[in-house]
Length: 485
Image (tube, rainbow, N blue to C red):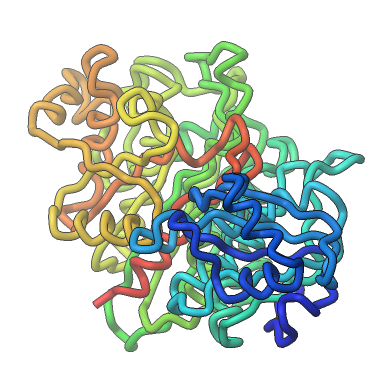
């Protein structure tokens, strides 16, 4: 998509659609006032009739308005002016773009609020680009049509460029998740990551199955044994900080399809398991944006890629695995595989000299039970570090909530035959017992675990986004890197 600054007045720009904003107090923004004047007070009449209320994300369309060059005007509600943040700006622009993109249109022009700061404006640009893109990768008749051209008023070229970099990175994450699992295999994912790294100037290293064996990644390799698709571990490096400074490590779970292994999932639970690599996709999207934005920080992204399938060599309940760190793990459920993959990848992150670690994973249904579909669970061994991550999520308007990590959860994963076991006692507290297993492999480094099982994949569409991969928390990770000290 070509993104350019809108230099014409809102009433004269020759675009298929123009978008203007209205806050909940009913006050039209400058561009909306111009539209109102050009149309003989049409917007004022709609406000008086309560057809335009300014509620956040609400949309009112005026077709073929007299006195306006565009074929339609969309008025998007911006909510309470004092409460608008990056999340609200993102969703408002995305909602308008999604509606406009329901039909094939070449261009759209956004005139929202000239007084927004650079961060709110770039978030809105990101939303406008993301909102008109869907999961319909293989539909002959598309549901959403991305614009060829996006015109944006009131922001500098740097702001537009930053917004587009964020959007393209969120879109990359969404595409990786939305691809069918027969296409997005571990090798295919690694190939896509390598291509992205070449385009953005990231250093990249890929460990194949032979390298993984040499590196003693016994936990990850055990999960991969049930599939004909070979595993991979991808390491991406952005060297934007001072030489020698310890990096921020972003670690992602990349189970490109999860059948549950011998602990086989029922069909309904398997339908969306192409999204079990969303943690890895989020890391790849985030480090792409970090590189494009040239942030002054050293970042290393590590993703462990496997399929969890069933064959005659599948790992079994009762097996004892030796992880890369040397710790042994008793397997009591082969559908608790993501933590086994991450165990080895986290150990690699520590060995690479990470100063602090964030891992992201669609790890447990228990986290969804606790927090619902829209909220990510945060678990940590370092409260100050968790506070930084939580604040970054709040700044970006992405919802996260901290869950406890009491010692009792760690006691539940103690094994009688190995150092630890891969599930806790019964079904209760499953998100925390899973996190406690991960904590065993970070060697005391400041670490935050993000269980994104709820928001990473939308089973039904939102007003601002199509169903499927959401790209959730790409923007949060970028914000963490931006605030890195």
